[in-house]
Length: 527
Image 1 (cartoon, helix red, strand yellow):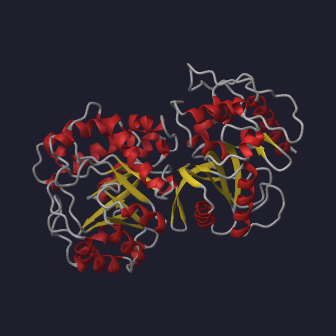
Image 2 (cartoon, one colour):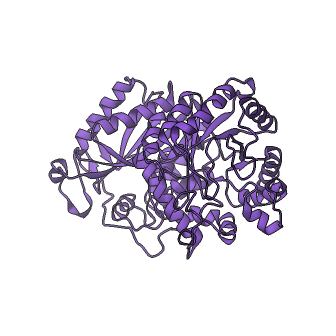
């Protein structure tokens, strides 16, 4: 009874917020009134009220692309595989997916005695009319195994049309915007991920107007609790890694560096032999590494580039040996490569993520390869390549954080459009790559501003994990007068602690023991 009363209280609060009564959350659009003359009176069945007075017949018969938002949910079977298959089938059906929300694990609502859900949403375009789109989504649900069941009950996949163009639709079979958007945190969180805080996009303005609130869907989300809800038992952002869900908000993760190269700036030549590499991997794990990042190609300034086949000759024997050691149980293996061919072979042999310093610029095929592999992808900011990145031209910035955010977002968009969902992307601002000392410091201090800048065009992009790779780099040697990279571990700890405080989620380090300690103390101070 108490649970029922609490549910009714929440629904009443949401209903109040639906009609914008006394919303306390500040509007992110102070200069913009999104209210339109949308009647809130009861509408007859079959009512359609497109914004800007568009007729339903005109919408249904259009051949031009319509911008849409589709919600995804699953809590039965292999939830990640169901999402991946749904995305593929939507693509095969002529739905072009242009953006993805983050991935959320959420507590069930309405019918609470069932497994937890995965939820997300995608934004895209289609030539299908709204009812044809609904029919196609129902076909996809059946193909994935959904059958008739109890309302709000378990299901392998659930696909709902949240928004269709700038239209308001109410027929016997379809209501757009989706009638329960305003009360569902598991719908609103992914929905706002697909929007930008700047309110410059004309379609987004139309969508916000459909929320019936002056601050748009942002006000509706804030009324439910907004960002303060994420990280709770009710809703968590997660990353899909194989059949696991990684919650990077719980604690800072540590990635240990394993270089197989003869010429890396810090430990070149030490781990070229399989036995030495395996021993180092065991050491990194014993010190607390969550991820082992194996690199067979040096990306230090002016490094000579190896071919993909040469890189594989170094990588394969070591990778084959490391995946077999019992210490790797529960750990992740990252392949540090910019070649699609190397990425495919590495994942085939046991790697669980790809770390690309070029963000797809040195071998564009890697993006579609990683999309097909279905593994997390680290995309890093760099101008040029390792042989040119420190040229005078590539070191010119007016506002380094703003420009890094813009250029890194371009790399993220290329990855998304190639089929890598946002929920599998990690961002690396590229400390030491196309940066001078002052640039590196500004980026470490300005990780929050980089997120904010990305959020202007995509709130989802502003929430993805950030990897910080500053371990033993030369700018630390300049500051501390340490010529030997190995002597820069203390400086690395200090810089990483600052990075965590400013929003870093993953540390890439040579000395894992120090990195883990820095992460633990920094995390404790944030609690």
